[in-house]
Length: 209
Image 1: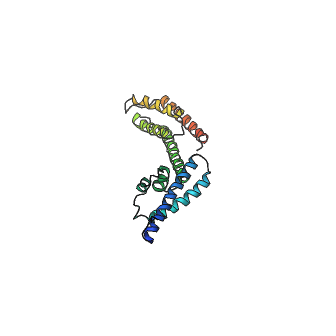
Image 2 (image 1 turned 60 degrees about the horizontal axis):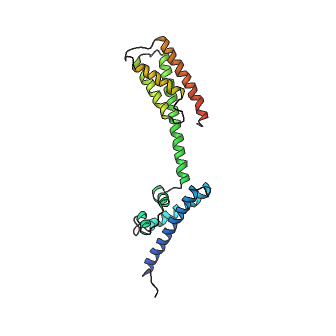
Image 3 (image 1 turned 60 degrees about the vertical axis):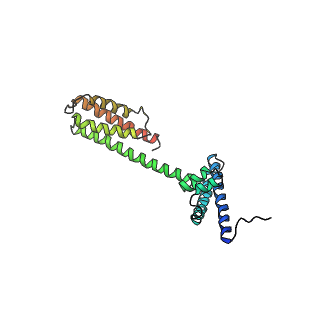
């Protein structure tokens, strides 16, 4: 006896769409694994992944009333395709596109922090030239500079500028707010700032910035 899966044309279309959705999820899972294992190139992966995502979006939109949750659909049919669900539902773009966006954001962030460090170096050096040598004038400038240097991940922990700024901040913390640096201290701090700035600028090309 033949068992019918559908009673009318509408039901038949629904089951065909279910089968297509199932196939897209399975294909995406295989594609994600192939990409992670380096079996296919990034360009091949991206092209195929974009096709699958486009098909998925069209189908998911068509099925939104009968399949309100793709995760539940995958659970119902015991699909076990976490990578596909992440790519199709959560991300919506190929991994290669995600990586490019992350790299661009990282580069932008680094550029902004580099600019911040340069600004803080110059402000601190200019302030000393203008004879702003009171502890409550110098301390915040060195504190800002130290914080911006620590935010820049491309600099090693033992970077000269980081160490020197920490030493100066520690020295100033032991003094009173109204105390002033001696002429010798001010000259030494300016020398340390200039030396650290030169080291900082020299470190940037080596770090690929």
